[in-house]
Length: 114
Image (cartoon, rainbow, N blue to C red; front, side):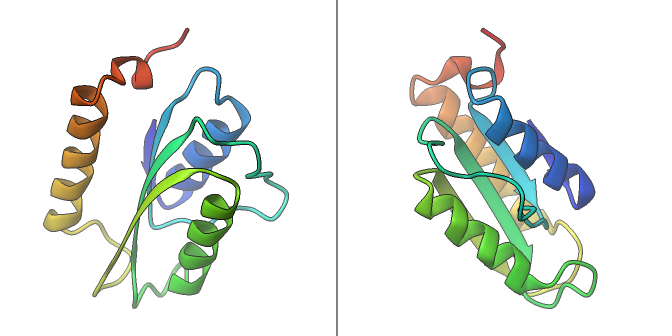
């Protein structure tokens, strides 16, 4: 499951609420709402990217989400990039590589409902 901005916030929230069904979340330029509980999320893998000059969702919010998720035991790959509220080509490529690694790493069920 993946999204950008508001879609990323929704994807990340759903991933945390439904870990038994969702194993991977791509969260591009987002934050983690305060009411979301990131603990006991060891089975979730997350790819996050956030622009350091994002005028819509401040970079600090994405960085805070990254740290909260890691503290909750989530496997997080976080990439900061120079830029604003966007998904640059190199971030798209990094996200594609993350998906490939999940699939090739024996986690084929990462994107299937059980």
